[in-house]
Length: 74
Image 1: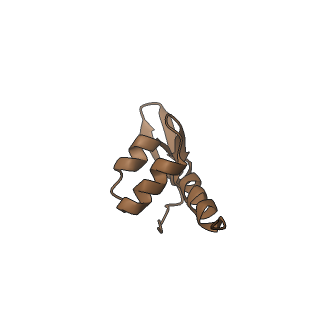
Image 2: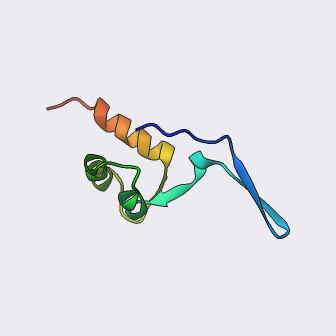
Image 3: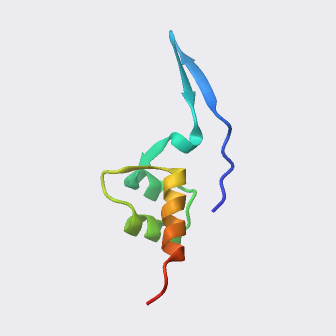
């Protein structure tokens, strides 16, 4: 899976300016499971590797995928 992250994005909400960095935005396991970004087999991995009730950034999800792929088969 390859994603092209933007540098950062900001928007103004009244008197507050918020700067968003795509790699820092986090989503719950349930949100990742409903994302159209992943295949069915990737969703199976998400369901296995991520904890219920926790939030993860795309970098964290990719890191969990890489760690899983690097494990030796027993």
